[in-house]
Length: 242
Image 1 (cartoon, rainbow, N blue to C red):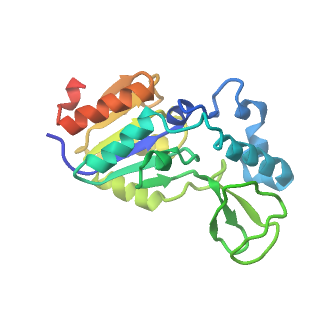
Image 2: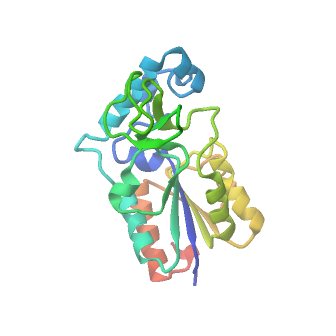
């Protein structure tokens, strides 16, 4: 019977089922922009107004009543609540749907949409509304130096030391709704496999680039697969029977 800490990597496939656009969502907000313009430090330096407006629009999207945690988010929150050992969600998503579902142990390795970061004092700030190039940092009082607290291409993801500490001690690693294209997250399964003690499971709409590295793979919508898998874990079922 499986026991011990669980680490769960979640990606865009989980948020997409809640109605949020992803990088690869055809016709979505990301498809209307060049990522070099809105998701790199260089793009921000060239046109900070464009970048701020882009993330303001994404922040407002979270306010849409139709955007809410889906069954996958809710199942992971239940797992954290009912599992007898720590359950850590490491998410590539910058929305707050895991928290809204009830998960408390969440690390946002790519930042958080509803936060800003002051480039003058380094403070990370709760920022639920619009941000502009003239926004004032409430911590240090400087104007015009608050940027979205989002990890852009070319920047180092957040919380990496804590993430690898958790990977080194987990008894199970799950990867949910991620393509396996973006590193370092795409390398987590190989890191766990090198330890050779924890089973690794992919739950995805389709095989990821690293699907062959997982001990077990299950394919279908996250909103269907994740609740079923969590239920089996909590019952103590053998993973191979899920």
